[in-house]
Image 1 (cartoon, rainbow, N blue to C red):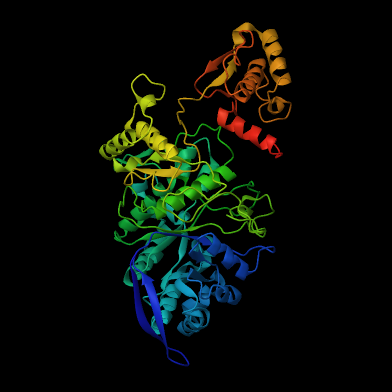
Image 2 (image 1 turned 180 degrees about the vertical axis):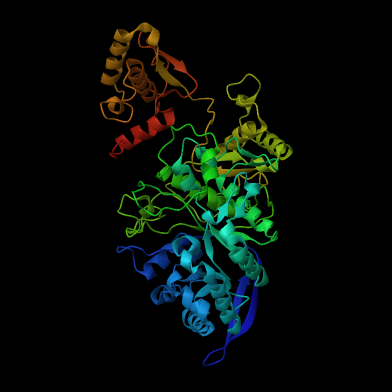
Length: 577
């Protein structure tokens, strides 16, 4: 990333020379530091937390003096905001805008590294009455910065919600809503182009998935490997809902003639807990998002630590590895702000509202789940989350084949993807490459650089759907022997080491309440806890070994890995959940 520095004169009561440095390339991940809470640490502690976690870019929702002073001399880049409540004054009065820019921005330079100003936030949705004043306010704030000699160093934008885009599937049909396209968006895009700035849009694939998880593939939402969704108008294939939303935005910009203007993400993220409450203000989603994907309705709740960890880590690693293009704009860059830094107890209608559970950290500064802002495809620091290496479909089959051959020739165990072997199906280049890449990655201890293959692979933190483990096996009940023999076998298993707590009334695997389902759970627990030893899956003919993960209702029988993790926790004195 090139760094360009220039001397500017800051005009005010005294003329001050400032050396301001500009980065010439995007591709950076930051966080949104919201403060709608009464239990957050003080700004100085927050800055230390950011530095300890390698977070170098932050967006705040005002120009709070204590916050801005805490960021002085840290090198952390800040996007500050002129709040919605001040927007009308800035639009109607150039002198108000000039005074705001001097007091709220210039006064903190150069110690505090302010690189962008957001004029309002999601104005079309939160304050539609201010819509006609939005571009005039942006114009006056930018002119004020220009008068201070800061126009090159500090860019002006305004974050939109995705509700500004309509007809967004297929993505190539995306356009701005009729009520804003010509009167607001066209002059706004002209302003952004003229001033060398960029469109800012808040994108939340999470909310689309949460609305109808039975219609949208979980892997498509998370950005994990998946069959993809075709734009039938262009023939372009989409493997992530985030990219589909980005391209719908780019298509809307293209229709107004702005084919090279960048669009960065002011907010994106996923909730780790909670549920929607009646009347709670949630981010809008586009109707098309409820009609794509191949979700089967049996995945974990949308608001879960597993989903939040997978989504945010996938976004972070993707951006920092440079894979920022989209099917429609392969050369597109990305600046992304993850929402949010903390769980904020003032959001939503209570602590179990999803709006209060988007944070990377709890207010006590403990991580909600593991994540890593260091980039380079490295897994989170110890205690490390599990990770997998998967193929990047967008590079094409020839690239995947070359990388696959390299992996198989340099230590990956590719015997299981040979014709007739246990992982040969599905017989696709993408599936075989993912298997080979992951074998190479795991055999090299998940070391830095072992999941790249010149851009043909990337790391995910949620096990991809359909992952084939040639060594995995499960023990299931044989319904043909009848309920009495199954009950005898079940009783023996539960009395001799099987963990049968999950099939008790009210427990997660009590349903379906059938003898076959309960016996299968008990038999498999006994089999896994005995390390799949010969003879531990028989129960006088009442059970047999299978090599595909069995599922009974919403209960998937545990594998050897998860059983061993539970045993280890129990031996260490931790609760076995």
